[in-house]
Length: 357
Image 1 (cartoon, helix red, strand yellow):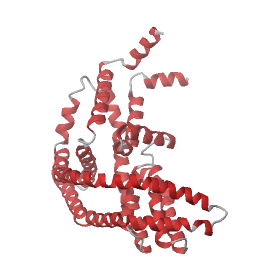
Image 2 (cartoon, helix red, strand yellow):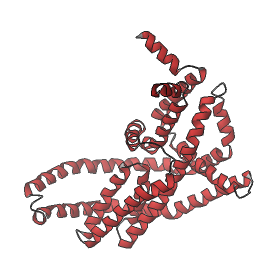
Image 3 (cartoon, one colour):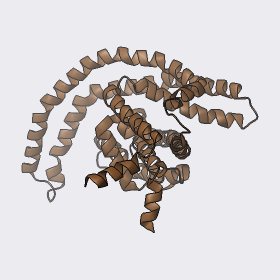
Image 4 (tube, one colour):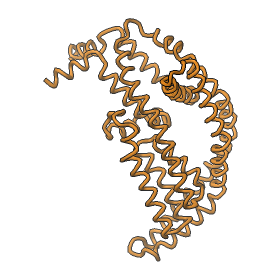
């Protein structure tokens, strides 16, 4: 038994690079587990800088110098960011504030609608079930109210942190974009030797990760704009807020689309009732989700992410439980990274080939 374990570890850690690479992964997991909140602005800045690198290369393809393309990319980022902070974010904030103030009225409207269900659907719901539902809701109402008060107090404290992040964000993006070569060279000095495995992992990751990140941005914009136009055409309350949620829901594979559908159905039901407008709204919204999943995603991503849906769902739950929101956000890139490491690890590909033979 000990001999088999010894052979296994020798096959896994068969050179200095694999040992150091494993230690780096372990150290990174520990850092992210304990300091994920502190590292949030750095993570977002790295993502944006990574997107701007792709934009920079696209600009360079028009025979523009690297330095000028970098300046143009950063300028576009500043313009888009300024537009969001002067128009989109205030609009979302106003609708979010209106929604919070309307929660008591929406809650009463929802209870009134539920109370009419036994008369409207006597075969499906009876009065005893409604009574049990009301008791469960009333028991949870006190805890929900208390959580809202606590969240409001915490929100005042977190506002200062958010403002600090907003001021640091463009500065961090600037350094990650303009000094990325020096940063990458400094990180590569940690790993000694020829770094063959790291080069192979990065070559596989760079193509899939860049396509995934940039594709997700396009998907968020397209789905969000389409949802905003749909909700505006029906005059749905909190349309901009819901459209942003629909756009961001594509970040969480499979689960996000289902989760964001619930508030849309509830708000549409309370606003329009069980009428033609409600059914038409939900039908067109489901059509949008169908087009996104069956036409837009294959068109944007093509062969960028070669992972089975079961693997993607499993990655969402595993990394979500480990790192929270960022674990869900990076579930597919992390799964792709594990796949790339497995394919590039010395001894793994040869052993898999021999097993197949």
